[in-house]
Image (cartoon, rainbow, N blue to C red; front, side):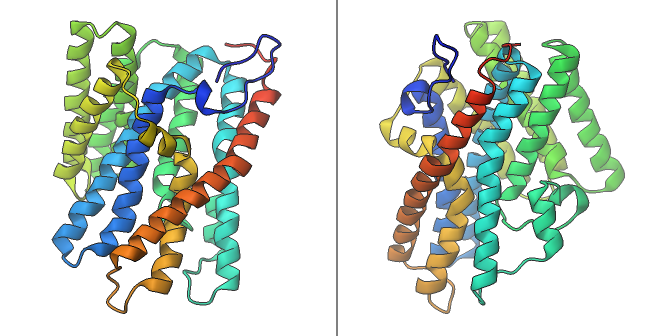
Length: 336
């Protein structure tokens, strides 16, 4: 985010953001939300899976975008500033979301109920590490994101910009090794190289989209896609195809600075939408879905509308104030 001359952080607003990046966010969140909510329209398992797989493309876009953005941030911010700002960007909204789930758990009988260890592990963001069920199905991607934030911060503190391709290669080899010895893949290990593909997009942009940089980007895409296809336990082909398509889409949007007001609107509130759309969908479908479990088109439309409204509310009253607080706390810290 931009900072003013006086050293005070500029408030979070659409004017301090790049429309092309928010366009990518908007496409990603709409893919995720529409796949989760829209899949309830499908009466065929095959069609349902195709709709759900659209969300995989959205998740891949988010991971690429995180790699691109976080690579920039760790180079322009001190380690302390980076950690504090990331914390206030993601954790308060995350904890509020868990609190909302807990209140629903307490007050409503026919909702999903979770154990105390599930809540504790979710609060500490270690559900996947200790093998405890998270209190929200969407948390699996956030937990991978959190690990990447810590990993890239440590990597930059130790090596700066050096050894990026070596570390990427080691991650690929480690992922394949774990798959070979364990007999099954790991979501975290499988998707970690995707963040480095986002970094490769940043390097290509930095080079002015030079031919050699684009060749490296193609090679990293090939290696990332190959490792996904080999090591994922399910939907291998879909994940690989969405990775290739998402990379091309992101690079084109970035290179030509393409922005869309429609997608920017959803991109700005994407984090809150990501956190709350599944709760809204559960509430609406519990009330309006027939016994068959297949939702009607009006029910899906209502769920999408309310998810957007709730996301806007939590973005305005939770996300923005916390991001601004993080900026205020780090305003006088060194840049790097």
